[in-house]
Length: 264
Image (cartoon, rainbow, N blue to C red; front, top):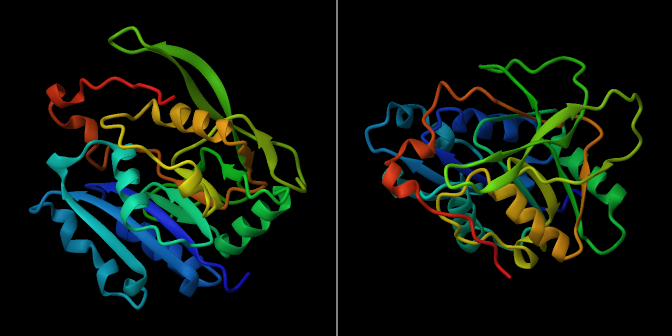
């Protein structure tokens, strides 16, 4: 376990929480020296958030690799995750995909590995994934938080009449959950699996996709025999508030006219 490496994929769009996410991640890991981080940093040269990006000057900086893009080159999270997988992943044992605004429980790395091994049948085709419990800035993590599981909420249509299922999270109220809970859905902002998932189910470029990302990837996972599970405890927390940061769809409307197409 102590020799296993974890690759952490983070796509970040003009997000001042990125540095705090990275600091908390290394601080809370039992084995921080086993972490390898790949970041697709989409930022504007004059953004004030550049002044606080101190993760480049820490003891763990050598464990971080970056792809830096001007934010105007951004083509959404799928494209960013594609770049990370194609250029920064280096055959690490485990693969963790998160957003750039997260917080962690103590020993999160060991907990994730142990829970993944609990549900793996030897095929290494298991994924731990859920919509995480929220935190508040700067570091307010709720005490005694319960785990969550993804559920289908409703269907919605976009401007072109394309209909898709909308997902949400429900709190699991049961106490003393012994092993991860089988789940039907995938959360792109918190997903943990064996490293082989990058080769077997890689991201495609898929420019300007946001709400279609999770269902698209779910189709890939199911076609390759992967099974999804929700962890028995929160482990990782997400900042759901968006008002403090920019989002990629604030780019020109002209560039956002892409449609989701499924690969065969």
